[in-house]
Image (cartoon, rainbow, N blue to C red; front, side):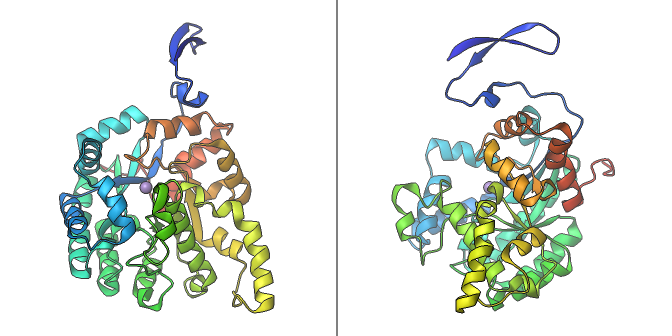
Length: 374
Ligand code: MN
């Protein structure tokens, strides 16, 4: 640490403590702005979800990735308890934290892997209760909170009904934490979910979780199953299955959201197209109506959640166009204030920052903060 003198807007030199372990943008005060900041991947939990997760882990029957990750997130030590209290809070403390971080509106969703690790009927019940609690918070703070509905994909027909109920209540979309008991949404059994999502115009936020049991083994070492790498590998695999299976030929109007700057896919997009063409020639891929990148640019948008690095942001803008990028903080897993400062101190101009912080999310989710009456 050292002390640095900075000149502020009023021509007064101010002394700030400089932490050399943090990038320079993390040292800056939050600038004034002419837009609202909408954060789109913000997690909460319910007591029932935490209790059932702990029970499952204690039983020894949890999937291997969840047994490790859940043991950390829903454990009994001090840091998980602090995390639990932040996750459980859908009231004033969360609002105060949002104020401190500079977040105007948070789109909340049940934390990963949500109910997808439970047996079907239990999962459906916990998801419905979570959606009711979420809606209660949204009704109490309509200018600060919106919500994505949790569903239990392991009961596809009930999940489709819950999507319809959520739409009617005023939730804005659906959160699905990648695989469910090792199965992915391209399988025919999940058709009712994709039909409901498309017909009711409810975007699916395809959120990461630890890799499925069928391929998690090499990820269980060194913490790789977690958010350093395994989460992105799993969510990107799921997105690629939806593209390469032809699912998006069946559901051309499905809206899918990927966090974490697109889980790496924008980086690979040109090569994916190139190799897909090669695979078709040798018969290793079936022929799709569009190129993989065309589905990605048509059906997907991405959020910045947890990626506080300007180079991948620039790449995503170049590859996808700025209108397909939304801001997310990934609270409480990430420092939301750092997320805000990172984007505020990027080399984007005011109009570009406004697109990512406000306009794109506002249009996509139907969040018109001026039209909401309290
Ligand atoms: Mn997240």
